[in-house]
Image 1 (spheres, rainbow, N blue to C red):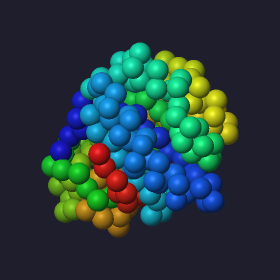
Image 2: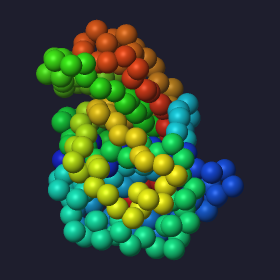
Image 3: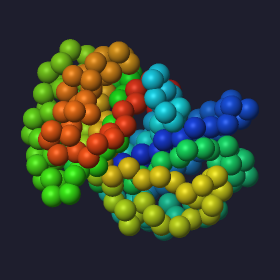
Image 4: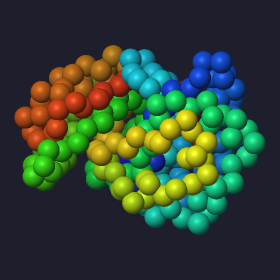
Length: 223
């Protein structure tokens, strides 16, 4: 199934080991319900690494990119609960990126997801986008076990709005320029699909800069 809405908030982070149990409880019981209660937030997911760094990947599907800078959402970002303050202080190596959804195709939500963080080389944005949306990602859906594929592109202005929550994390968030998301029935299925079709050499031939970062995650929770 394609994403709900036309934008995504993508977040990768490690969590201090001593606080992981509390983090997962907070994220399930308080944080994700709070976020999904903001107008325009349509669905939230949390994943845990199978073969990836950082350990956790979290994402929210939203109605539009403006949702991620709306007064209702920014109010929550600037007024974190005590439990949120405690858990955000546990975050390490965080990457938080608000994205416009360029392509979202599929037949359902998979139990595993591969994330690929990449950037286009200068002057090759259109060629890379055309290959991903017209060839590479649609062909992935022909593979047994692959349920969905998505291309998301960062909206830097929306991503970089300053908030209280950002000041709680240990350092400024990294930002992903483009994000590929591939869903499938299990981790090995999405790992093989990305290795075959979206490996670093193939991406570079089509216009990506060197250094794409691929991680494989298992679905932890969805709301």
